[in-house]
Length: 128
Ligand code: ZN
Image (cartoon, rainbow, N blue to C red; front, side, top):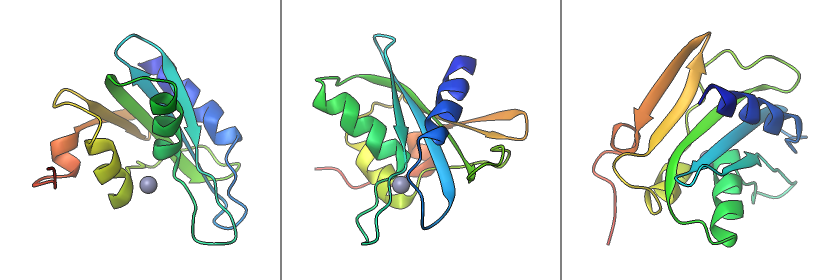
């Protein structure tokens, strides 16, 4: 899991964030141990995609369906990610479709690792 923070940090280097200058990286761990990297990708419209959904899109499009955790780091580009970075509302709803109750969302506040369950971040979620 500590390694996933390194993967998320590496993903931040690939961030395409010329508008917000806020680089986010994610490491999505599948239950089989494979880790998918994702970064935020912006454009000059409004169709930006967050790091979390980038990682999920990569994994899902390669047939992955069972996920253990996602680790997220975000901060202004070029700065160390020291403040907690949790998924936006859209990503929470998106991820909720593809994870089970054991799925964990990791981020970091300083050196302290924070862990959340999906139900912590998206209580009373919409599912049909
Ligand atoms: Zn998002």
